[in-house]
Each structure stands twice: as structure tokens, then as C-alpha cells.
Image 1 (cartoon, rainbow, N blue to C red):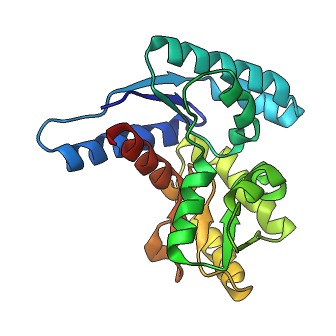
Image 2 (cartoon, one colour):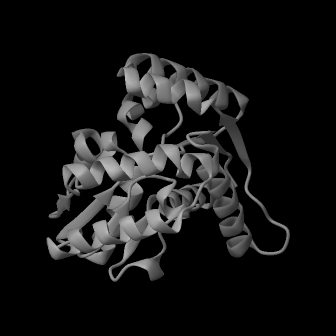
Length: 230
């Protein structure tokens, strides 16, 4: 079994999910008392969120690249960046180390391919939904159109992620808002929805909507386990 290096804390709410999912899947595949070999470096998300707001992506990239080097030195065989938004600087992180960075959008893109969708909705932070770094990677080599919510809906999603989900607050009224946004994307032709934020799966589940949900956290964790055990 190879060792998985996790860059977490963005937020720690979803980092818990990564740790749980990875260990559950290793146990399911290997049985008995097996668990994953992994290393976790958890950042102070307050500092990272401030860099996001300031648009200071280079400093964020430098900080995460340094963490990646530390994990490689500590014995990690691959890296998982446990957040969708910070994959904006994935190339800089990958260039800093000699071990592979398993990209979260690739895990979701592979599942879109398996599902055979031509149109997929995307929910995430404002950065993930509006900028191209994620959408283009998600649709790479796929004949699929990525649909995003309207501007007011994007603002609602972004606010809920940062002021509720990242603080561990799960509110029924926000779940209803997200469900309505999914319904509008479905009306526009989305065959399913990519949860392109590692916290959204804490709020929205398959039973809450009428179309399939691809939870990037679950898919990313599964990809890591497959890589570590192959």
C-alpha cells in the first residue's frame, strides 16, 4: 500500500470526510483491521481564505507548494489537495514535487465519462464556478457542456459555503435553496450535478434532488484509494 499525502484544512469539515472515506474504502477492499497509510498537513483556513479574497493566488501557491514538499519528504507517495477551489494553483503545487498530484476535477470528469452525460451542472465556490481552471479541466477530452447557476444563485452558494458549511453549520433552509438551484440547472438540461466544493456534500444528498449528484470529495477519495492499492 502506498502512502497518501493530504493537504487539508480547507476546510477541516471536509478534511474529516476525506480521512473517513479513505479509511473506510481501504477497510472495505482489504478487510479486517486494514486502514490507509496517510499523512495529513492541515492549514489555517483563515489565512488561505484571506489570500483568496485578496486575489493573492501566488502566495497561496507558494504556501501549498511548500507543504507539498514537506509531505513528499515525510514519505508521501502521492498528493491530494483536499479542496476544489485551490486547484486553481494545482500546476504550481505539482511542479514543486516529484510525486503525482491526483487532481480532483479528473476524478469527477472520469465519472462524468462513465455516466455518459452531455450536460452537467456545477456547484462550487464563486472561483470554481466562474473561472476556467476547473471547468476546462473537468470537461477535458469530454463531449460535455458544463452549466453553472445564475449570478444571484452563485452568490448564494458561495455565501453558504463560507459562512455556514465551513463553520459546520448545516441549515435546512440552505438545503432547500441548493435543491432549487439544482432544479433550475436540470431545467436547463443538466443530466446530473457535480458538487465541486468539498463541503457541499455535507449539506446536499442524493435524496434531496431528482438528478444524480457527483460528490467530488467521495470521487477524489476513491481515486486516491485506487491509486494507493494498485
